[in-house]
Length: 126
Image (cartoon, rainbow, N blue to C red; front, side, top):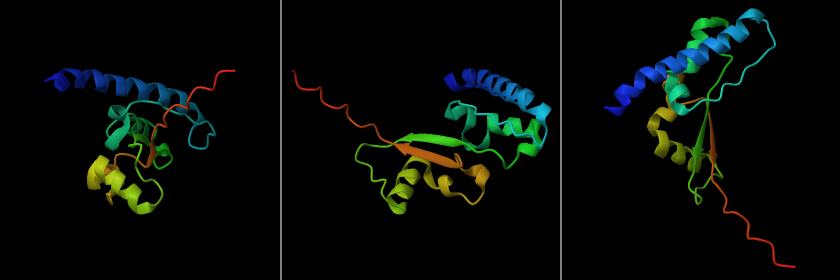
């Protein structure tokens, strides 16, 4: 029920962000060198239903020239040393959709997996 009330506001915010970026990039046209970085939450960009798709609908020449990055906090003990452990981490987080053949079904094109290191101990007293 909470999500149902929030959903219209989220759509409006998606549309507003996409509109602003589209207005900034539209004047340069397809050959323009300007780039834009849109920083938004997963609900506004993940799974091909948000701001990036709205921008590409407004500026079709951007299709295939943009990508989504998903930041995923991994457990401190997560093994990020090889392809199999990373695949397991992504599958645990996103299911098999992380590796879907249909790119639009993936949560993002890139995933930044990180873990927070404990803070360093304080320096010894002088």
